[in-house]
Image (tube, rainbow, N blue to C red; front, side, top):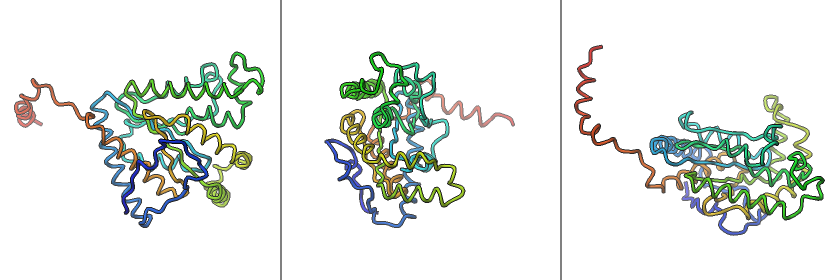
Length: 294
């Protein structure tokens, strides 16, 4: 497999999504890509054990993308070798009545992973500047002061939301959260093919909704909103990575490799040494266990 510089997928300056590839060639057959992914995800699972023992940091992985971008299957394949207690996945749906009684970040804040664990947000707090921008009428459900009709939701409102998100991410990063944000960049044609497969395969029919076609008509608007959200919120502490997602195996491999490449740079995240008084008596503890009767 040819060498991939994963830093090239990180957003460090303004991007135009129409100029970013949705497919790349890794130069090897799919089975080789899957083999490489298997190795990396095993290493990531071992690293998570170390993170748990270290106990001072956690990892938040945010996944965004258009419908059919492959978020669910990516989670399944990338985190397959993790200790099940070491990774918690949250899939955020339409806000509940209770959630709407709080600010828009509340439900995301209480779902953050505790120190020592990975948290995966399948759809994230960015839905609040994506879906709600395409459908601003949803904001009215939040019952916000000064917002009585769609016309009250102006550019200043969205700028404030972006600022709230940046502050939220800065705050959790300053408290030990290592943040990764991945946009699974899918082409419109590939989405069409995947929607057709949902209709053609009986065991996939349940995933299809006529609403998928309605949302597809708003493709360009969604792309504009994604582009602005990424450009306004990719920071040093909480970077965005744009992942070519037309090929699922490639997307999974790239996400896993980025995580591995970045996390293994944290040289201070190590398993703690035993206390000196315990360490000096290891031989005695071993002898006691060896002589113990069954």
